[in-house]
Image (cartoon, rainbow, N blue to C red; front, side, top):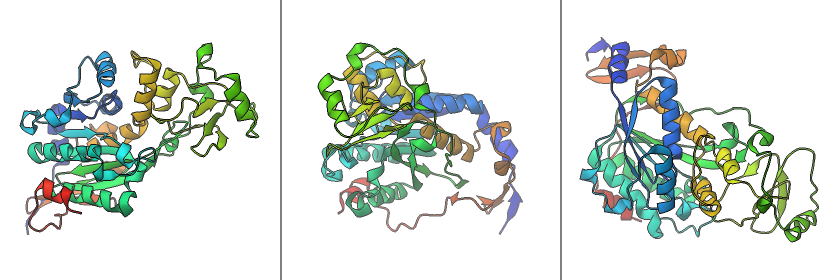
Length: 373
């Protein structure tokens, strides 16, 4: 066995020179893209989106207004061979089949099969890394069999996947929103999931000072809330009514939902959230342009991902690939001992390692792996 020192500094120097190319699938209004651009600025690296796609025309309008690029439409009509080469694939694939709002049909729901579209692009283009995002319930759907099937397909495609569930409350946002993130690597690397632990931004910093009367609920709705034995407090709260009609008040927002009642969340039991407030709750910067009507923006915010979580995951992912300048990397990353052992990069450390050969016999086709029950 030949053991030779691995020149990590030279590798990082060479990697930094190149532009990281990525694709943004099921892009919505661009939550992943905002996160990538913020990370690129922090790490002093160049990034370029070479393809974006979303079937919703209103989302296309919002995305184009903010990024000067109109996403392609139906992903099922995009041939994998026509997808540009890229280093990073991002996809917040449709969550309704796995959501508490939906009927929990999973892969039996035709929208659930859109994961197939991600798989066929991964199979053809083989990007180095990917990040997928979905609702928390994906982890437990069908007793975990749905997620297991997804992970097995990703392994069959030659990736080393892992997943983690995050709560936006732990990343500075005053919104209780739990999401699952799935990452995957082609090559051996060392990767840490972000820890979170950021102080929550107070609601009063998110809420607008002057709100038009049209956002206030009717006297009937407001009086009905008061009958639930809740009264306004000096502290700003958001009142949440669940499907059973129970009302609770918290110093943060419950998860924004695209299909929920317009009075599902009320600030101090009095008014609905404004479009800007909803986007702030998801971590979008105020420079993000709002070009769609209230109904559409509400839907878009409810379907989006928490930007700070995506940012933290992507940042650690790019660092794991050696694509960040040394000055932007925590010392514990720089202290790793790197060697090439018989041509394979090995990292001796205590953190999570990815890159062991997947235990897959007779690699199956995507369709066979996904269709098996």
